[in-house]
Amino acid sequence: MRMLRTALAVFLLVGLGLAMLMWANSGLVARGVRVGDLSFGGLTRREAAALLEARASRFGAAPFIFTFETRSASTTPAELGLSLDAEATLTAIWQAGHNPNPLWALGEQIELFLKPRRVGAVYRLDGLALERFLKERFGDLEQPAREPALMWQGNTLAITPGKIDLMVDRATFKAHLARAAEELRYPNPPFTVPAVSRAPVTTETQLARVRADAYRILNAAPFRFSAGGRTLAITKDVLKPWLTLTAPDGGLEPDAVRGFLSDLAPSVHRDPSYAYLTEQNGILTESTPSRNGADLLIEENVPRITRHILEASPDVLSLLVAEKSAAVSVERLHELGITALLGRGETDFKGSTPARSHNIKVAAARYNGLAIPAGATFSFSETIGPIDATTGYQVALVIKNGKTVPEYGGGVCQVSTTMFRAAVTAGLEILKRFPHAYPVLYYGTPQGFDATIYPGGPDLTFRNDTAKPILIQARVEGTRLTVDFFGAPDGREVTLDGPHEFEKNPDGSLKARLTQIVSRNGELIRKKTFWSNYKSPALYPIERNPLE
Image (tube, rainbow, N blue to C red; front, side, top):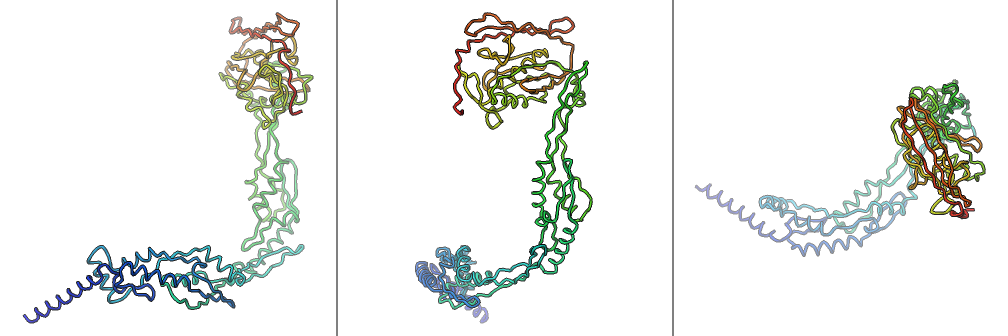
């Protein structure tokens, strides 16, 4: 019974003690909470904030004294980029021993009472400000490592010795600042900043091997390559800047090889040239043979050239060239079923200005080699694309808004007119055709066999109503433009009635008609008349080119 009473008394005393501890810490910082050498236990939140502010003020004003090698420097926390987060620090102080769970809180308070705990002040460190301080105060004492290197001295490769670095131990320096800030240490004792050193990664033995390999490669020069039908040599002088003079492997600089190939590429490049076709005795032949295009493959050749040189090969290396097949050849056309000339259009632009002649050639090239699929509708305006300086056109006269004005692309209608003639003589179905506003002398007499176009306005459209594709070929010889339509004959016969001029007037105005008659085996397929109503040229005054 006596032992029971003793145990009960001890239990009551311990419980009373714990209750008194919780009561003593109620509404106050738990006893045993410290920041550095400052005790915050038993303070109200306001008192703790005041004490923290006072110490932070002293900490911020106290100098740091650092010594690195032979130099000492004094600075402030602000210059080092250190700043205290007072609110976060106060929260950390207050939360120690005040867990929302009463049992956990009691356990923490007992632990703090028996063994006081230091709460670290919450701070921020500006890495840029810290690095700026180190560079300004000790930067000239630091010695960055220097790797040994190979350098040309005339025709000799010399090894420049490396150097061990000597730098501020930034990790240790930051750790020291962290401890000082967490403890709001005051005053701060002088601190000797340790140095760290690093030996060069590359060894002179490695560079000696790279040098020997470089001499081996240079002594095997010149290296020979072939491309575009010619052979060229890479001499020692050309090769020297290509060498990679770094350990451990050496080799060639890929960008140097790539630059060499890029410079070589234009001389290898060749555009494919189409075969110009003609029909002799019903057989389609090439009046001018086709030729494949060629382009140097730069990326594919970089490793091949590198390997060729590193192996010191005495052979001639053929560089890889991409062949681009000409779209037009007799063999290819026969595969498509294109076997005969279906229609031809011809015009003469003699007397045209140089700009107009230039535009005719640009536009004709746009259509040369173009294929119109069977059943497809062809639009001249949609196919030609933008007509401006960016697409190679010059300023020449066009008919626009009741005037004859200078504009990019003047002369393109010479091509649309010639193509209209080819489509009509081929017996194709013409869907849209517009005559010019007044008679144009370039299109010959009698008038009535022309077709004007303007982007966003009049267009020339027709349909390939044959069973096979139609190939367009356009060529300029002197001042003569010819447009040929090649395809598969289907027995249709084409007869033209006209053009016939009528109602001709002294002012140059007139009317004309042209009739296309298409038949097969004596049966009429289509008969279409194209009417033209030309006004007097005097109604369309010529404006001066403002660029002249």
